Image (cartoon, rainbow, N blue to C red; front, side):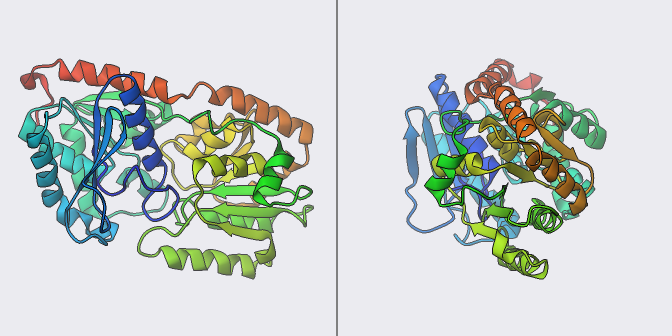
Amino acid sequence: MISLHTSPLVQPGAGDSGGMNVYVREVASAMAQAGIECTTYTRADREGLPPEVLVEPGHRVVHVEAGAHDLPKEALPDVLDAFTDGVLAHLERGAGADVVHGNYWLSGVVGHRLKHALDIPLVSTFHTLARVKAEGGDLEPEWRERAEADVIACSDAICVSCPEEERQFRRLYGDPDGRIEIVPPAVEHAFFAPGDRAGARRAIGLPVDRPVLLFVGRIQPLKAPDVAIRALGALHGYPTAMLAIIGGASGSDGEAHLAAARELAAELGVADRVLFVPPQPHHILSSWYRAADVVVVPSRSESFGLVALEAAACGIPVVAAAVGGLLNIVHDGVTGWLVEGRDPDRYARAISQVLGDPTGAAAMGAAAAVRARRFTWSFTAARLRRLYTDLAAQPAPALVACS
């Protein structure tokens, strides 16, 4: 596993860590439990990190020194060669590898080079793609799109999270030379499960008698916390409703985005009803989900939507943007509501439908929890294990040819 720009050992929700961290960590863990030895390579981003961490039997995380520790994400393309060399050196000292699986485009570039150096199959999971982000209004540099095109052309398999992401991929990139595999992410049901709302609120110090909206994600334009704040401001008839925002600053402009979110809440007159909470570990985050009346996911784009799935597993209705993988996670009108566009009034109306119908909301939450049970990391690992086995069994000449 290649996860260059963010470590699976880091707390998700701040900086460059998010759903991908969870995905890489849980997939590697599930693979190890299924008997597949898995090593995750990530860049050492601070002093004092051990060269290797044995997460559990069969799963190691290797910290590769490549460039200054405090590099911003935008500077990471400059250290790709050094990182690749470090991975190769570690593999040559050990037992090598049967398959390389790159996560995100930066790791895909590394995986592309490893494929040629080692004559092994390349599997790519992009998590986000430049053309998809562009459709949501977030433009990426042209050189990123070129790099992604090279990785796509070289990948023996490209993993997507759901049928909607596959349709989106084929529409924007055409049919790749390698195979496309639908490998859905999942949720750890030992943490994320329905529970008592009042008890959850008491546990985390929230009032038991006020409507609670919840946003979970990094504070960045892509996740659109501003839409959630504006929706609270447009939520008429619920003057005591509050919005909890769990997440931290992200990227080089992260602190500015966080300050802008606070300023927006003040401008709308809801600052006293918006609670900013730092990222939380899973065993505590699940209590925040259970404490909420509704979870708001207004992202501009989502390849999957792990927050929506975690909320569903806790039996909480979700009001989400009708984009990407959220179209597959949220069953409109059954487990929550999908909202077209970015109009806060539309979100407010959908939220009002949940808050104004406790019986209907309870039915939505129950349906969401049942639907979420289909998503397990053991199933995800089984899909990947089959894929890896198929690819590793191919002779090198059968791999996708690329330059």
